[in-house]
Amino acid sequence: MTVASSASPARSPAKSYGARPLRRIPRRRGDGALAAVFVAPALLGFLVFLLWPTLRGIYLSFTQFNLLTPPRWAGLDNYVRVVNDPVFWDSLAVTVEYVVINIGVQTVAALAIAVLMQRLTRSALLRSVVLAPYLVSNVVAGIVWLWMLDTQLGIGNQIIGAFGFDHIPFLTDEAWAIPTIALINVWRHVGYTALLLFAGLQAIPGDVYEAAKVDGASEWRMFWRVTLPLLRPVLAVVLIMTVIGSFQVFDTVAVTTLGGPANATNVLQLYIYNSAFGRFQFGYASAMSVALLAVLSAITVIQYRMTRAGHTDLG
Image 1 (cartoon, helix red, strand yellow):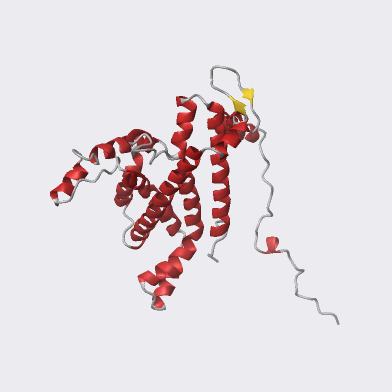
Image 2 (cartoon, rainbow, N blue to C red; image 1 turned 90 degrees about the vertical axis):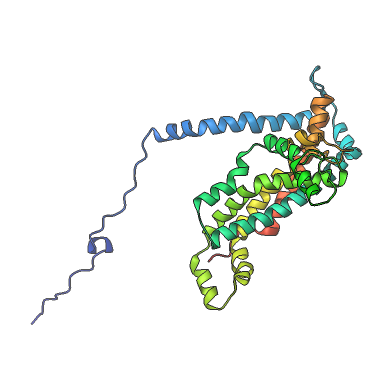
């Protein structure tokens, strides 16, 4: 006697649950052309305003060129002159001093503002107020602060004098000029940097802080053991961006001190500009620009590796 089996044959998961098999969506013929149309403006801008000037500048760095006559090949003469130029090295030292002050103060202040916004309030109005100085151009900010910090008539020195202290020559003294310019740019950029860090803080899961509170961690301990390690990739990228931008400082110096007093604020970008458009030494100015590009590339690579910007501690 045979018993009919009641077991039905095995079915595939797709048939068992009524799911339809995945089908490849065909690409329409016009998609590639449409994508090219959208990419073309950005690509054209990159080629015309970035790639071509860079290649042209590298070529001119090997020539003697004064804009009035055709470029004349000079080999490595401009680079030898850069190495032996004391003004170039002095300008580089001034620029490094500016970068250290600007990045140090700006990063600490921006991180503090970002953490306070994250932990205390997330008001959109507060974020707008923090970002407001960044909407002011560097030239306008430089002129306003130049008036405010004038040794005799500036409101800053008027307040200092009201407290019985001597007026401070913020922008006319060799010791005060670079720190003052650095702090002016801190005031302008700190809000933007803080919002970048604030965006990075949003990616940290809230349950990490809840677990730390359960373990009895204080706010200060959570900052050092939770916030900083998990924020490290974003902080590293922000540092790379701000360092590159700080090395290219120009407009604030140009409208406040013009490199003075006694070349105390003669940053590298200003020296390059004066060499090119003041003395028409475009070949030499191009060589200094290429040298600055090499310095920034090396600093970026070192920063990226030291901060492990491409890795995160989030599981």
